[in-house]
Amino acid sequence: MKYVDFLVPEEYREMKNHGEVYVDIRALLVLQEIIKVDETKETIKNKWKSTIEKYLVTPEFESCFQQLITLFPGTLANIFVKNFVDTKNLHKANQIFKDLQQVFIEMLKENDWLDEELKDVLKQEVLDLKASIGIPDEHKDQENIDKMYSRIGNFENQTYLSLIQNLLKMNSEETFLRVARREGITYLGSTMGFNAHYYKPNHRTTIGPLLLNFPLIDRNLPEWNHIATLGYLLGHEIGHAFDANDFFINQMRNGIEMSAKMEEIFEDRVDCIIQKYDKYQFPDGSFSSGTRTQTEDSADMIGFNLAYRLFKKLNDTEKLPSFEKYTFEQQYFHRLGYIRCFAEMNNQTILLAQADTHSAHKFRVNGMMSNSEEFAKAFNCPKNSAMNPEKKCPLFK
Picture 1 (spheres, one colour):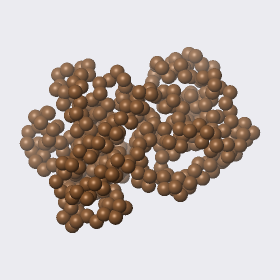
Picture 2 (cartoon, rainbow, N blue to C red):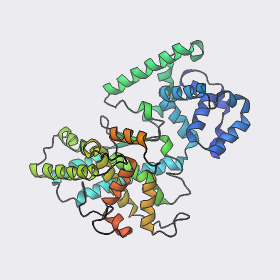
Picture 3 (cartoon, rainbow, N blue to C red):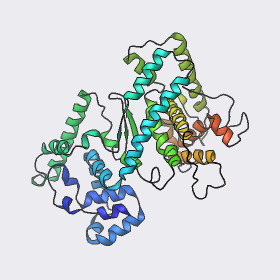
Picture 4 (cartoon, rainbow, N blue to C red):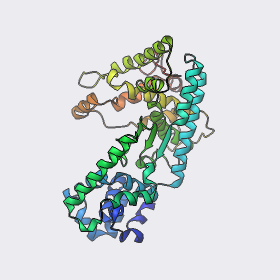
């Protein structure tokens, strides 16, 4: 596989100063562990047996793994993207983001309860929305990285504890600087996570590098697959700029006063979503809280709608192997649902879900799908059935 050849490039092997110290064999083991590909693990073991067996699957390795993720998130993301992510995937993700922005504008034009002034404001809001795909912007500039880590001094002349202390101090300083620049503070710890985020202060969506590879996006997969997976995820993050909470915040920020009628309509639509998710029941008999999860649920609804609209623009009708029995539309919905495919809920996952601002994965999938007339039509769901309730909860549609 292509990332096996990266192992320890010559140009990285001797770099032991500033931010480049993370590119030693342990950092590469971290990257290998993140990928979670058994074939890669075997290949690395065979080629670097004496070094790897010293660290792999040991408490020391796990500690190193966590320290690297905590202390070098952006720089690790930089290396990961440069060496493990197909450049075409980066371009594809950026194009999908731009296409979704245009689809949102088209959706606004069809809206029948927002006035034209507010539509213009929302249009500009979505056009102003920026995306960091794979790597935070400040970590794309090697000179900027070197300057940041040079504040710590020579890595080799410090003890382990002093180095950790200085790195933590530097990251804290960077965090305060980001707050001062109104750029948000949550990206550092999640840059290498299998996740995406929307940051209100700088109106920016960030997509982690682990989302830019198979099975979400790959040059050998049909275009509609990318829309069903990455398109939905990007649409969800775009949706956060206009979700149950941020919709009002954005209007206040732009000095726009919504009419009482528009405000009532929006609140009724959010309340519809809340009531919908309130009805979902956990295996232990308790119920989900639509009030707690309303921002994520409304972002899901927006992302689902944007992705489907983009999907309908495609001429691509290629089916995946083993999906021949499904119609093209059914295949699309199956693929989107697989993103949230997790093991059945147990007591621990129920407790976590009951405290999360996200609905449980099963509820997220069923909530989006059952809110879609197109899904009901694709699968011939009977009227008033669980997946085709009479009352739907459109937010902007």
